[in-house]
Length: 81
Image 1 (cartoon, rainbow, N blue to C red):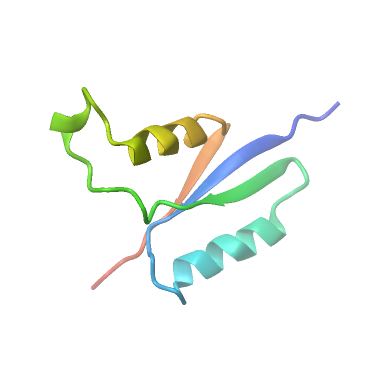
Image 2 (tube, rainbow, N blue to C red; image 1 turned 120 degrees about the horizontal axis):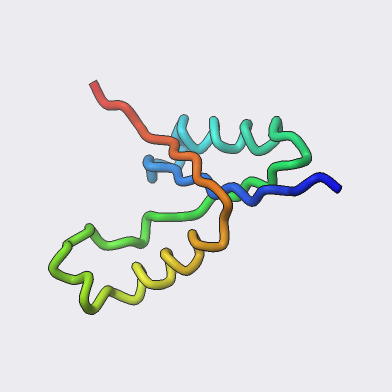
């Protein structure tokens, strides 16, 4: 039996009409049956601060728990010139 891999997709642009989000959505449509892709939202995350690692914010904990459920991650990052 073929294995299905769960893939998290992180979109770095939060803009409503983000080209990165559109690209991620198209990749979900084109993905083979062996990949189950889902966009994981990251806009609610506060900025990372290593000083908070000992007592991380609830948003970090929830995000880390969610991302750990996946077999892989694809990043869609904006480029600003």
